[in-house]
Length: 324
Ligand SMILES: Cc1cc2nc3c(=O)[nH]c(=O)nc-3n(C[C@H](O)[C@H](O)[C@H](O)COP(=O)(O)O)c2cc1C
Image 1 (cartoon, helix red, strand yellow):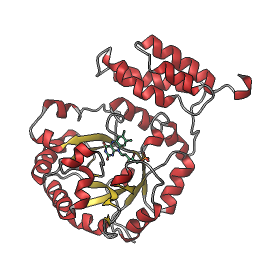
Image 2 (cartoon, protein in one colour):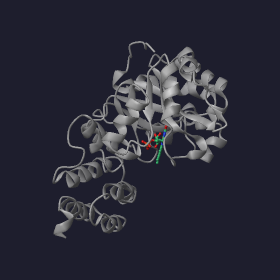
Image 3 (cartoon, helix red, strand yellow):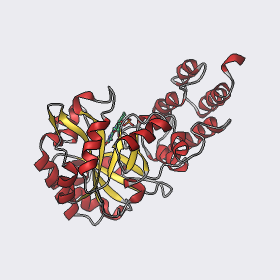
């Protein structure tokens, strides 16, 4: 289908770090953009919290000038909340507002947000319309293939969201009950892409450069969103851009330390180490002895601890297995 020229090509036709609550904070986003992601999105932020002007929620909107282009993702159930939230985020420098209609988590679902919107398409469309009315930023939407397997979203969902005011649709090729398991359904994404008048971004299981490129090509989508495949391996973005998809010697250590020191700018010690351990274990995968490094990672409580384990892991990663 002939699609209109995009106002946000870095997202619609780019390689974006997918929003991941608890993962894609400011520090990790800065690492991803440095390593070649063309666009970033915040973790999901509650529209109701923003609408109530919650200080805690507003803190989630903070970002560093290096994190551009950056979109903000809102989740919620009520059009009124989206109206107030989009009004509030519009002047803050984000490049677009993304609406979360894919989160499968029970707590989110119970509140009528995330993928539950896929079970009530008129409400999803109303939320898009109201958001669009309250911002001059482009509005995008992120969906799954359906709330249940028996009730998939219509194949013309691209037309529906476009008529409501969205300029792009990201599709995670799974149904809500799949959570993140099982093979991604490329056919489902492709059916939506074929009929969509607005760009479609494919999402799901881009765990390597090859998997990412074939996801985009096989689904005939315009852009890519990469989630878990970049957690602990942000070099995947560089790989897709034609460079080395894994760290050079020394780069694992330096990246880990850079991310931690950026995190320390906004999270106090010792809490920062507790949070950072979740990232550290992800960096220690796929090389000889990685399991032992992960074990050590969960015991790190200081900058020095992280420095030592990261330095040793970097050496181990670049030592051929037969040399052990
Ligand atoms: C820990 C975690 C947190 C996530 N948080 C969000 C979120 O805040 N907003 C969202 O739209 N999707 C969220 N997702 C879903 C991802 O953006 C993505 O759609 C999903 O992981 C599939 O892509 P992948 O196979 O490349 O990881 C999250 C996924 C994980 C694993």
